[in-house]
Length: 285
Image 1 (tube, rainbow, N blue to C red):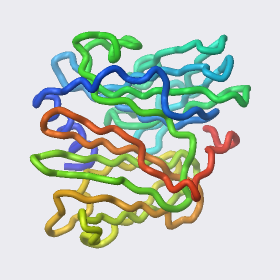
Image 2 (cartoon, one colour):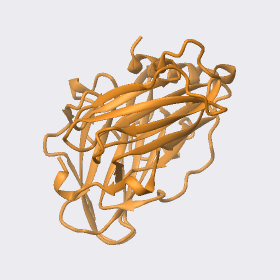
Image 3 (tube, rainbow, N blue to C red):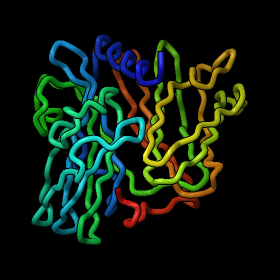
């Protein structure tokens, strides 16, 4: 079973175990940038249910025109070739979107249901806010994941506007009681980067050989943790260190920790602030 198939199986299992709604998300995301990479998920669970994403774009700094272009997990462009333009004409105005309104769900290249998007200001240097919500719903209209009582909300996070040239990490993973952990890394720029990932147990002991992966330009990598590392006796708890051995800007990511009781952690991979830089406007697809 490949990483995408494992991710789908884990999500289905999690939903059958029953989800716990994590409470209402905040009205705005944790950061604001003029360009942001955002996670894209849309997996058919059967029975009319989809594990999917909802996006809220907010013009908190001023009127904003945002272009959104999306990619699958094999660094192929999906959706309308020119992307989707989102016009926010006043400070404080919001717009909600889904994979459907971004035009990717009908694209045959999006069969895995995993990918990411690049949201970029078209003609202004003003920053905008993005909130990403992940969950299960049968109502695919914008905002339904947040507002429809039949939807199961998993968690929220924000778009990321910085990539790293060196060190990053996942602070904690666990497989205790059947918990599952997935790591998604993307390279939003065009040049290939090489990443080395080291798995540690809770005492800081390296587990198995470091994992080296090539991350092509605009590519996405999804790993099941700790299985992807191939350690003979994988630890129940630990952390992950990620090093960009290319020593050039080009990676960021999110991790998803699924607990058997339905609780979920959905968070951004921690990037060392000394090694980060904003996504360059000229590099937008």
